[in-house]
Image (cartoon, rainbow, N blue to C red; front, side):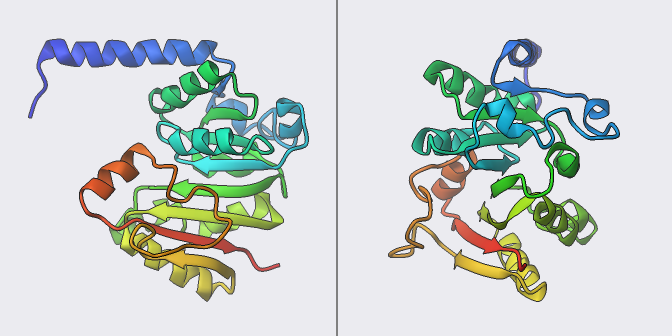
Length: 237
């Protein structure tokens, strides 16, 4: 269905306005690709503690969308710093506005490509990674784009601290099963795995707000009756 011309213009205008507000936001970083892939990497690589002004553990959300999960965690855990990463700045504009309104000091949003993470973070710089409702890339030829494929896992292992954990929440039972099989096959440690976090009587104690924080897509998928899965794992040392 084609949108009316007036409605399309309005949507475009709103997006441009968000881009302008992101450019002026203290909560948004928007480096160019050239800024990131220079010889020594992005300017804050290895210096994120300096950027936040403290030595708190750093948690990264990949494909953060509107930033609901990143913001929910940042509000609940002021003892940690959070970075939401997405290539679509018009989406995480919502999270940046929320952070501004609440005057949070422990959250930032970074507009960049996930495949450039090792240019953005140094080895052992990150404490946790959250991957929330990524595109499962179901077609075989799209496997290289799955955020839990072997190449991405190797990159995550490089930037994570030795005991750092990865969390995956998805409505895709295929991606959930694919990742479990891959993690086990590579000899890594699965800490927790659930095929239906809302249907299960309980989940792993200490898992941060697994049910309490929902993304826009999680709410949408849940209303459609889709099961929401969760996986937490750690790399072998």
